[in-house]
Image 1 (cartoon, rainbow, N blue to C red):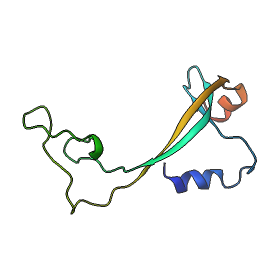
Image 2 (image 1 turned 90 degrees about the horizontal axis):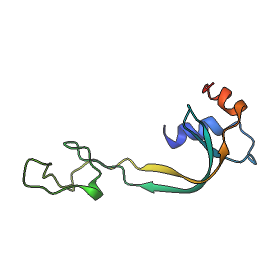
Image 3 (image 1 turned 135 degrees about the vertical axis):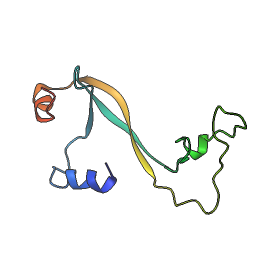
Length: 100
């Protein structure tokens, strides 16, 4: 999902409504959102690891690629971090999500 797709989904929602995260369809919990982070989403095409954690290995355990100036512009990734668990997800919310 992109940020724009999330904005589109929220477009008709009440602007004052609290936003929470629902997790685990089989035993659903709800969490508050504690933080938002945007990071560089560029990954190695060979091994799939993020550039900022990219291994520089000379053996067969991993690739030895390093990012170069001619690499494509990274697509950022936005993370919504869960905060405190607020309890079990309501039955009504689970039904709307299709988890029941």
